[in-house]
Each structure stands twice: as C-alpha cells, then as structure tokens.
Length: 136
View: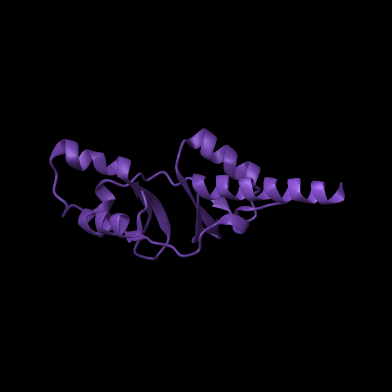
C-alpha cells in the first residue's frame, strides 16, 4: 500500500509565528509555493499561511511587517506518514486544502500537495499498465 511517506516532500520551507508577512511572501515567491507551514517557538506546527490567507492583507490595507500569526489559518489538517494515499486524497477532498503537513509524533516531517498526489497516482497507474502489458 502506498503511504504519505512515499510521496511527501521532506525539503521543507517554513515560517515561525513571529516572522513578518514580508518574510513569508518572500519565501513563497522565491520557492514558487502557495503556502507555508507555521511553526511555534518550539518548532512544532501550529498552522499554515497561504496566498489565500494573505488576501486579507491586500483587502484590509495592512502592512507586510505584520506577523504571520495574524494571518495564518490556525486549523492544522495533517496526515501521518503511514496514512494511505486514499486517506490523503480524502483529506484533500473533505478539507479543501492544497497542502497537508505530514506529522510524526506531532512534529512536521514532510508535506504533501495535491500535485504530489496526482503525480504519484499517474506514475503508479503507468507502472500498473506496463506490468499488465508485459504479462500479456
């Protein structure tokens, strides 16, 4: 069975609750990502800040020097490393999020995006078709 661990990204780009929005925006643009896990002072995940969250900054006229903690989504929907792809897909579908932190004992160990999941499913389906064709 395929698990979240099989497809998660372990090169993580994160921000801290006390970082400025300017710093978060800089990281998003630099790494071409649409959201970042937010860590507390002990390094534990406490939320996510996304492009969608930052629309408030634009609409309300706030400054980029405001802290990430003011804009992040504090609800952290995560999955465990051992969760199946079906569980991951269901979390994306029901929570309507673009990324899911992958957690081990409450610590952030990876992240899975919807794109990561679609890529993995496509590759797995291709391998299955190739194996069936070879068995002939």
